[in-house]
Image 1 (cartoon, rainbow, N blue to C red):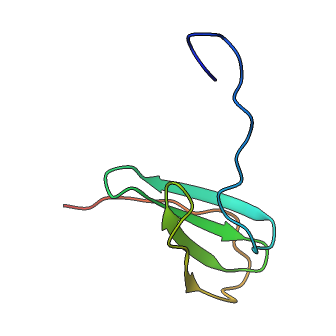
Image 2: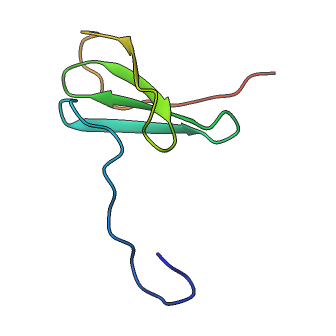
Image 3: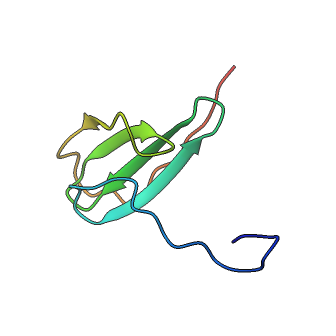
Length: 71
């Protein structure tokens, strides 16, 4: 939402060629996102959708994802 004009911005597709995204976790410090889909895969990409990488495939019943930064 554009705070200045109170208008919503048009949605932007950041990742393609996945099977219905069901989970997303953001690493804002590292500027990456992690996504799971109904095909039981886990992906990583930069926050603008570039540099997409498949991290895991066919992992079984995935219902989401969480990101934790450990010290």
